[in-house]
Image 1 (spheres, rainbow, N blue to C red):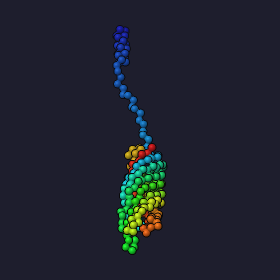
Image 2 (cartoon, one colour):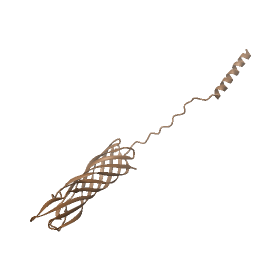
Image 3 (tube, rainbow, N blue to C red):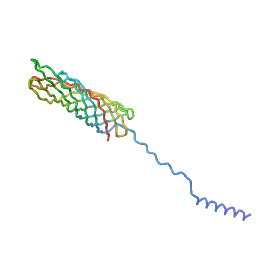
Image 4 (tube, rainbow, N blue to C red):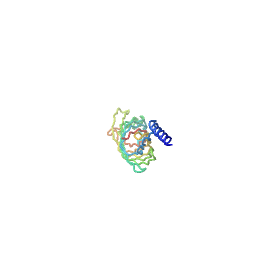
Amino acid sequence: MKRVLLAVLMAGVASNAMAADLPTHKEPPPAPYYAPPPFTWTGIYVGVNGGWGWGQTSNSSFGNVNGGLIGGTVGYNYQMGQFVIGYEGDFDWSGVSSGTTGYSLGGGAFGSNKLTTEDILTQRARLGYAIDRTLLFVTGGYAGIDTKGTFNDSLGNSGSTNVWKNGGVVGAGVEYALTNNVSVKGEYLYMPTFSNTYFGGTPDSVKSSLGLSLFRAGLNYKF
């Protein structure tokens, strides 16, 4: 009997030793998961924009204006919950201009004027409402427009006047974040400006204001 018990014990020891030498089949521990930080509109951004402008002058000798524009943007947003406040400034090179129109000077004389908006500057506050990566916003502030008026008449007078027109700007738009850093936007702006005199001291002297509308699309990069 002792021999049987000893044989069984030795067999058990050998079996445990062989099992210890066999490779294990345990699964490796799962890789740790790091949740990405939530998206926010807070930050400084720069961008490019382009679009179309149109509007009316208050003097029929200039007529209506329209044309394209392109420029750059810089701004800052700060998000609080779903509300976003910020500042945005932009500068556009503009080809918005009026077609030359004929008008009467009296006494059988006539002339033609043309108005071109060469540069457009805005400095605006923005107030938005964020729906995840979509931002709905309204905006308003200061607008300045560098205009150039040219004239020719049948009396032999011709020339040009550059006038910087001051005014306001209001508008609204929508912006969508494609990534955490890149967003696209579309916006409408309206810019009423004060009246200024062009061609003073000539028979063609006129006084005119300008109400300019812009539709622009833009691409921004947030740091």
